[in-house]
Picture (cartoon, rainbow, N blue to C red):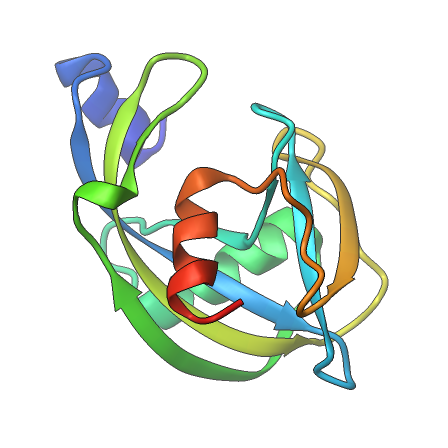
Length: 148
């Protein structure tokens, strides 16, 4: 059982404040952003996830990218931190969270994706100024705040 599952066993679906990361992964030209379609809500989103105890934010970014996409990140770079009421989200299973999201950017270390089928159904590069409309709400907030 992982850390969040252990917390959920104690508090149920009540809101948790959870720190995590979102990674803006670009192609080698840096003109296209990689997005992934989530399996739980069928919305496009950024690569990322919540921290595990003892991890740094950078370690979380590297781990989540490898777990979800099977690739490494080149040129990992800090971008910003987002938090607050507008980062509330209720998952399809009823779990509620207020996310604290540390955003990084980087370049995909490979195009040979090995998707985690439990979380990701599809990945696709989108032109930076032509992102899809059906984006996970928290990631839409992050992208809007960053000017995308």
